[in-house]
Length: 495
Image (cartoon, rainbow, N blue to C red; front, side, top):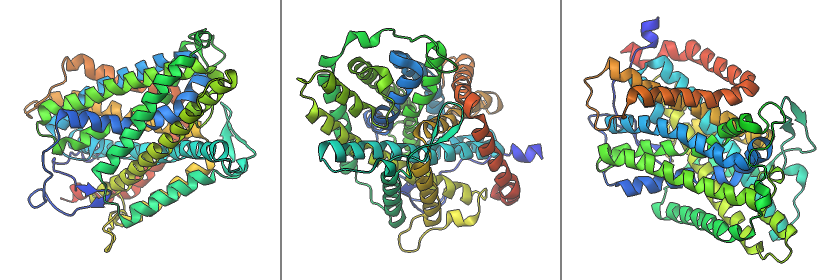
């Protein structure tokens, strides 16, 4: 049985999709993508995928509850763990320039069981990520409606009915986060009927996000109060609250900000020179985004006391507090720009997440690890419509009922496990399959790969200590599905 669990799948391209629309084909007959992307394109792709929810949503909560002004240090620690994982992604993506990312890499190197586990963690990543971003989107939309346009919106319909008090779920005065439910439902509907993604439209959204961030940095720096940086690392107030322990805990939370960088690896099949361009694209976008995040954090906690940033819209909240502290500050236009930029930028992130999850289900169904209904394609719209409906319904429930902090941490946990497995896969493959050509090789792999595994698992444990029940139950559910269905229906084993 162990041999069956560790059976690896021959490397072959997964079906290419356009906006979630699967294309039938095989290694022999499918139309391959044109290799047109340069290193610059890949860096911009990574920046566009990463810059978003991390800045606009979770940064404030991590600073307010865990790290204080030292949130900048938390981003450095998270970025370091990502750098180790990024090198390993670069080796895999150059060696196997196919779509599928961590799931495909694990299936080809560590075996079916590990691939299932990673695929199940990716479900945790993308499904919960779309809900997390939807909650942040709701916060910025309500702020824009109430404070900018003067349109009242009931607080009970913009708040989850439960929240996390640090040790348990408690009831709130909210009924449901209606805007979060509506945006997930609307985007899911678009994914159902099919969307022809426009590179031009995506470029506009990215340009808006970057312009808003540049404006926030340029004008916000004028209102920094040095007193807000003292103490830089607040004294510890309990498990995970401030001190170095809080910095590590915040690093786990803000790791959510980096979940898009591995999207660069899925474009390996379109890179002109994967062995050179993929490492540049992955690591270049990682460095650029880390510097942007640190700069935004410095301005954010500089213009507002960090304890006041525990909201779903921390950047807009910081500007509100700056105007309250200095009535002469003319920042209302900047707050409006931030809200518009966040609404536009987070909408595109939700779209990407809700397109990615049905595709993972589709791939796992094609491998026989999930029921065939997840692989069904709509005859008219040519989309994986069953998976899209299921993902949309579950994401709506999570976005409407679950608190933002728990959703964000669960996303980071799933991502960290996937990254650690990729690092382990590179290390294992160096010994089990040394003959495979490697256009890019992780330097000092005996050091980098273990450091990647250890750093990712260390950050994972910071959240696991508090949310271990949820993660264990999620893992057990995955085991039941795999051994109850996937193990017996695996197409690889049948062949």
